[in-house]
Image (cartoon, rainbow over all chains, first blue to last red; front, side, top):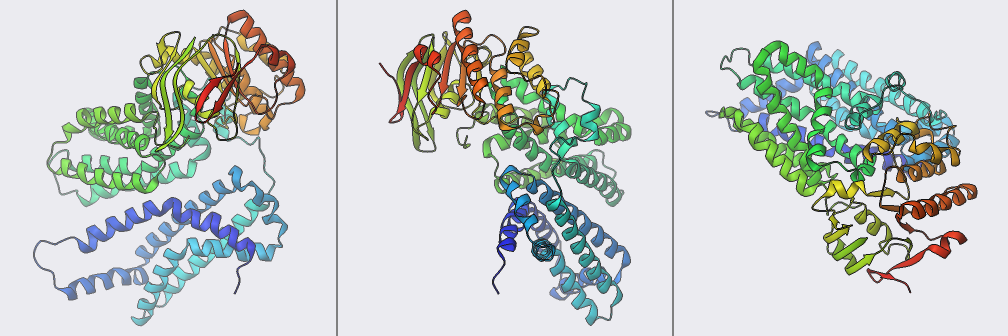
Amino acid sequence: MRQSPLTNVLMKIFSSGFYRMHSGILIFLFGTILCYCVFINTLGSVPIWAFTVWNLMITLSLVSSPVIMGFFCLAAFIYAVKSWQYVATQLVARNNEFLYHSVSSFDKWQQFKSWFYVQFSIFLPLIAYALFASIIGFNFGHYIIPVVVLLYLFVLLILSVWIYIRLSNKLIDIDKQTVLIRLLRKWSKPFFLLYTLFVFDKLKITYLITKAISWALIVGVFAVFSDIQDGPTVPSLVVLMIAIAHTLLIYNEFRFNEKYLYFSRNFPFSIAKQFSTAFLNYVVLMLPEVLWFVSAFGIDSFNLLLQGFSVMILFRSLLYWIGLNMKNYLIWIFILFNLVFLIILYRITWLLPPVFVPIAYFVFQKNYLNKNLID
Amino acid sequence: MLQFNNFRKSYGHHPILEIDQLVIESGIYWIKGVNGSGKSTLLKSIGGFLFFDGEILLNNISIKKDGVAYRKMVNFADAEPIYPEFLTGWEMIALFAKAKQATPGQESHFVESMKMEGYLSNAVGSYSSGMLKKLSLVLAFLGKPKVILLDEPLITIDTESLSILCQWILKKHKEENTIFLLSSHQPLNEELLIKARVLLVDRQTLKMEK
């Protein structure tokens, strides 16, 4: 059957775009989970039947345990919110503005079908896993939870389609400003905090998801490793994971600087000033984590936070070298994650600030006017 | 005096511009060249946006050795300006005035003559391309620049504003001896045309037309 032109265009812009934009993160997540959970060599020998049983147990737990089902539904909701945010952002992008006067000309049923295709393909990983778990569940006599999970995904799918139809048919208010921006109207906005304001204006969902991940990491990792009483290893690990959770915000900062603050390359600011001021944005954006670490670790939090910021500043400088290439960026994040992980295991984390910050400065200075970026 | 020494700009292995030696004295210059010849690349290199091989000096100050002092003397207006959408026009003016060390109230004359007071309190995201263009031109005149680079300054703005812009250029050049480099496919206004000398970007180099 031939796809309608509307479905074809929407699939190319939104579905393919969504996977292109998030492919790095998906590969990173699946790579990490598969490497660490399935293929990692265990101490001693584990028979193949044991692997099969455990995998079966993990899959069955989704369709037999309401708690695991709750976690899956929460993850699916976060994934859906991410897709809504992506589609909403893409809809208002200048090169997609034509959609407002083309999509809205189709009848509502056609719009529904086309958006349904888009969201269905975005949801494919969730649907595939839920179906797989359901088939296994049916075979083992679990009926209610698989049906609830599939129904939940279907409702989420229809809700997404309804949101997209509303978004693509509404009139754009070009002078719309968020409450925060309106409140800060009289305040003279410092140049070096513009990205923070951009986050609160346009990246609220990304920011909230990042904070939720940070909170989950703090609660989860400290609970899992509660029996380890060897000083800074666990807190350092949490700091590293929080820095990793902020990679998307760091990537967006680079993109914001390249797009909206490109004019500032003509400003008489020294390289050192340009380099160090990113720190200000990070301190403000990480204020909840900073406050938590200060309250939990007192004076020791200074060292921990310094480690985290030096890792983040190195991530940022790498972007000036790599450019807006998400795949390469995540490969480097993966490499650095493992390197810092080893540094934590060998308990030489004091090395991080004096080594990472000069490297970050050197990379930034050499690539600030990156000759390989297309201008 | 703007000076090029062994200037080379390329994208990957593809050379865009090569200027062995060239001195640009004070004046108004119209940069001409076909699409893709490298006019914007030239202006962005002079403006301190792009990496290049060789040297560009302004009054003997090198962009590579003393970037801060150099950038204080060079202002730039982009062909298609983009600014953070949540900032207002006044906030953009305040930002540039601070960065370029403009005298207090310097912007008033420009804002009034272009009749921009009505919308500068609105967020930049609500501006039309013409309004954005006018804002970018005002920003390029703030401070005490020795060189003002205007990339396609004549597009998207109305005819009344065009003639006002020409007056700004002529006045600034006459009073402060500022060098103007304008890239444009549109013919310049008659008053500017009399004063302007032509710089031709052709065959990957820059030549002064006699």
